[in-house]
Length: 138
Ligand SMILES: [Zn+2]
Image 1 (cartoon, rainbow, N blue to C red):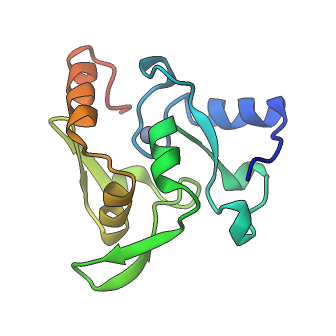
Image 2 (cartoon, protein in one colour):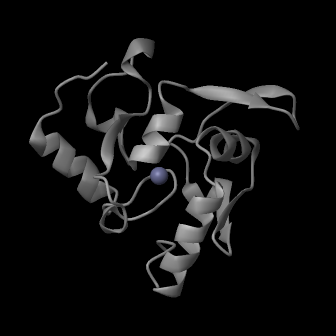
């Protein structure tokens, strides 16, 4: 579903994110395609088009996330919610080691797997950005 999102709201979300994908943290300037506005809780699950339910996501993260809210974690054998950019601290769930986004929690594991953070091309791209001092954010 595509709901109209006013430009001012898009700008607020992008600025709050520092123009970085709130999932994989790649900067808008380092991707070919424009980052997108993601409904953290998808509209089909009742998520609203309001600032606190929106995040900035690169096209890949947004596509792999789709309308999903959670996934199955094989290690804890539980259904776990995905990383929530408004409620969760990125560094509590992930760390970057040589371009690989390593999950630190079950939420990190299901998010990294579902959003396919560590496909070889993504890791290679992050390593190149690291050499240029453009990744990670902190
Ligand atoms: Zn991303």
